[in-house]
Image (cartoon, rainbow, N blue to C red; front, side, top):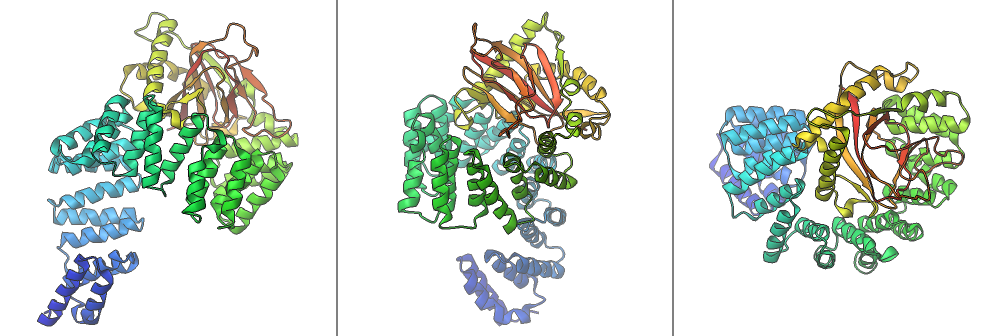
Length: 601
């Protein structure tokens, strides 16, 4: 039995905690806790105190003790689950949440925490299922909002919009739900409607950096660029430490032609008010680097390194910029220092590869690429680096890995069912892709004004033409997989009886636009389908707009493109995802493609 005096002290502690004084609550409760060691409410209270102090290990210990002395109290299980989730122990947290739900099936808080835990664990299919169960048990604003979050994470944006509308219908006056509805509209390409909501919310109160960011992006996308800039400048005054806002504004200013002055506001902020804010300094360097202003980016990084000379992010950025300035030997030395400080860092070691090859150390690059592939043998960038190193060394194994004659295949797509000719199909597909570029290729996210890539996975849109396209190309994918030569071990080792489309996007290049050399890191087989080409009548370069293969993104000497392929409307190209590929600058009005990645199932 708990003594009346101890109970009174516990109540006083609980009151202090309710007032936000966790330290005071602990000072009051600790002297009598030994007398309350079997009292579940007091043990639970100490767990809450420790959680408020972010002492999660101690909080877990007290919550477990509370559960042990009150096995039927679902609320105690729920709070234990919250702590486990905060510590990243998602599987154990879900086990505890399910116990809590079994004890208190009506507890909406438990259902909400289960969904949040599954989303945090990236277990999105289960998160959606639990969110639907929550909606079925209690169709309220919170349950619909959580369902929408799971659907958005799954890139099922049409479904997420339905959920956002249902949440808003449940509580139409809640400001946060109106904002969520606008975001959902934006994700499905209904940008004008979304912008209208953002403007009305901001007119009442520009109260969060997220609202400011969406408003400025919406205004810019609608062509109201001066207004977007004004909102951005107001926002960085209100939230001067927001790297996201500063980065978007710097990008906007660069696109407006302000050159290396695009990051001036960030530089002024760190110079006069936040000199030790490394995140802002890195944001300034990033904006300058993306704009090609390498000398100034390097100066910003070197100034930042005076405050944090061992910061891995700053040092790595400096090494990368030096390499892009054709100072590869210096860049390699800088990047090696990052590895020396954190030899277990995979990303730091990975950063060395291309710089090593440009610094004339192909043998070391080959050794490192093979070491990294022991853990991740199918990472396509590592295969690309290994093959490039072999090429530089003159090793005959390179030709087996990069056999362009046998591993690049082209297929002409016949008219799918429902279309009389291939031309009518390609025209319909091109119209659909152009619509997606208008809806989901925001100019602030693109590297150049003459380049546009859709941000949305087009596999998630409901237009039947997407299914028609996939059905038309799939037999050729199956043919390609079946014909893989045995020597292409990096491909055949993953071959199974089934495959799946993992991602689908579109790239639209206009006059002057190119696609930089790259590989698809997480792919297996890549595909490019040419939907539209509007060429220049008399191009200066007869290969303008052609695909090129074999040239790395920062090619060492002697690693130029080894194969170029002319883009022809209605043609599908399939090739290994580890092939370096890019597009020679376009001289005509348009080059429009649908591109995808295939993975084994």
